[in-house]
Length: 64
Image 1 (cartoon, helix red, strand yellow):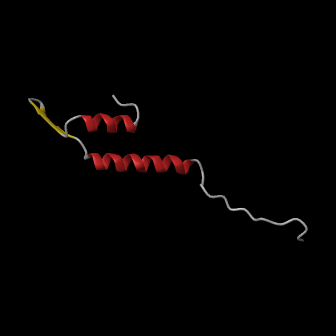
Image 2 (image 1 turned 120 degrees about the vertical axis):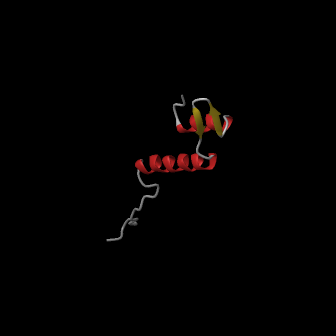
Image 3 (image 1 turned 90 degrees about the vertical axis):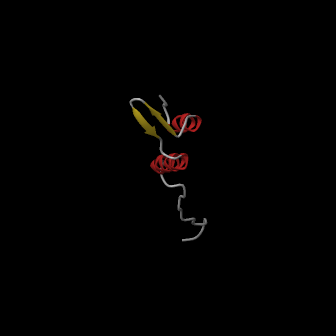
């Protein structure tokens, strides 16, 4: 079993899209949707760390 989303995407890319046997059939989500989900999760993780832009006010010395 994959531990991370990236590992799951690698495993799914190497395996078949659809498998069928006596017990039934299984179909995976398309690889493009898996990559899109990975990007979404990565952006959510990055957003937890705070804003990437910090706004500051610069006051030169001697200005009152």
